[in-house]
Image (tube, rainbow, N blue to C red):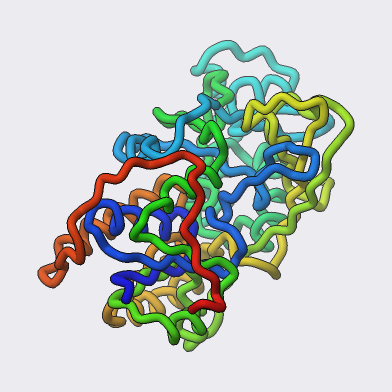
Length: 392
């Protein structure tokens, strides 16, 4: 008998499993249909020995001290500030847009915040209301920068024109008047020193946790005894697509290893316009690894494949609301994470959501300890205590 069956070994599932086991003595079974822990943050050494992110770059950043301190129990950190360039008009320019972006694209010599603000104001188009992603960008920086940097990238990434997407898609990306070229400005910016997979292994390395990989949820749920279910997969799939499928965007990754020490000046270069891919990531910039070769990945957005990004449109929000109401009425099942709540969360937001769920569960009147809370030490690289799918 398990107290919790946790479906999904990504951030949401791993946090819930770790807290329930370590803090409350609960017995937890974590399952995942993939053959590894870590969800989309999974990393591994390729055949050349270079640490790569299988599902594209994952850069950790947060302003939440609680989240950073929590994860610091399971990893040491490598300080890293992410920088991105975009290939536009034969030039590499900083993204998000800043003073240097404007100067390079338009051969200007603006030197102050006020000059850049005046430049944006001279090009911005007034909109009666800001409802779409196009409205956000055009009302801030004008049509030309929108066309050069945003429109085609968004079309490739989402399969829709920015005029069809919720304003939140591009509202996430700041516009700066200074020369700050960091992609994020969060208080904590770092990469797990030994990789994300090691972090997850440390989180799940506990006597009260069992991990089953390569498992089908339907089969295992029918053959394992448990009291409560924590579900981090697609919410529409959980309910057998009762109201229809929720649309997601997927990605196809093309990994390559090159006979050169470095290819790019920064970890990520965006390709908004001419190319079929959206960006190229070079992993050694992220990891700090020293190697005579380098590994890169091309990202090709797709409408088919594993679900990565909920598509933010009013129609999809209305469809999700029907599933959310159904989820809220389902007893002893708790939905957490990007796929289960159909929201485009960053990693730190998923961790915070999972920690909040744990507090909510522990505050319930019928939450009784199965055993004394444990404070067993975490042993780095000790490995997971796993059961196989065949064993049930």
